[in-house]
Length: 217
Image 1 (cartoon, rainbow, N blue to C red):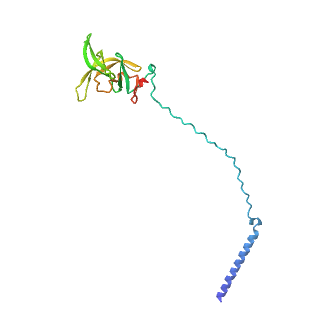
Image 2: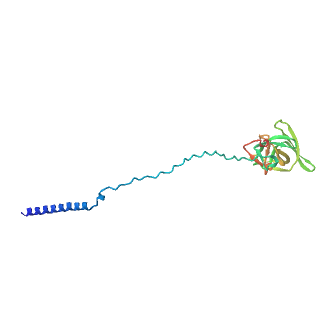
Image 3: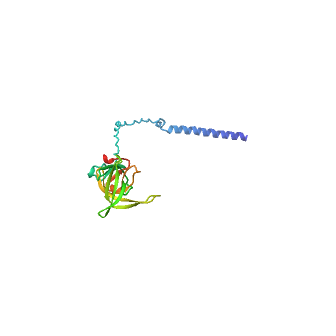
């Protein structure tokens, strides 16, 4: 009997709760204004028109400019401070008018010339020397005489030291002409009979070892 009473009580509570729930829901629905039950109208967003983009024309390509090539200045004769010489030049021996090929050597201090049959003698109380210069173009020889300026001792590796006479001769290469000391040497086994040293070149010549006969240009 007690279980039946308990079951009736629980059922009554359940029904009371459901009635309250539906009653509360109806009250809530009635209290809301009618406008809240409708979706709001959303106006479409219109994007503003962008101004037209001007057409950009590509600039024409600029012409390529080449860097100027810097070279040794050309000699213009006596008006130029420096004369351009190659590694080989024609050398004129002015006293006898003989032209021979000469090697330009900035490593040599004194100019040297091929001399044959060197004979020393005395004139007016001064030592002189007589020698022959051979023209390698014609194989003819020309005799020269000059006072001895000094004598130099040449040390040779593995061989006996030798003494060579030094005389003054007037030599010319193109527009360059000067009287310089010249060592008399046996250059028969050398390719060129004349070697031009610094005593002729210093302060007035630029040497381009990759060229030859620039004095003729």
